[in-house]
Image (cartoon, rainbow, N blue to C red; front, side):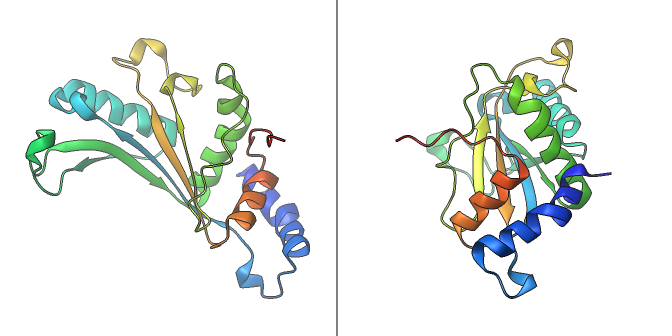
Length: 182
């Protein structure tokens, strides 16, 4: 079912082994999970908008999204303990590959003036994060169902600790990185 998973098993694994001269098959870089999150900010006061964001993220991910709550009160941010501060969903296995395939082949090309995702989103430990400005670029989201547009953060967690290996893995999977500046 998952095209991207089959491509990883058939082509990408062997290409990574050759490029990085990996002897141990357990050291081959692989995807571990994909996390999608939205910080709700002021919208947390309106339960209708919060529910709409949660439904939208669940629709995009193909899996139920959960509301994250503040762990402690911070007066400077007018934040109380157990106050909703975001929506998140973590994808693994089949759902992860299906979402990434849809993101790479359908969603990112729909972004207006898209020149590729930034190469600077790596954290030094093999994980990659980037953001999208609005949820309307996903094909399953209908404009009429949206109360308020919002962005989202997407984090791809890999099994490798090296950014170069992680970059190559994502590049071989088809992630459209921006051209390197010369």
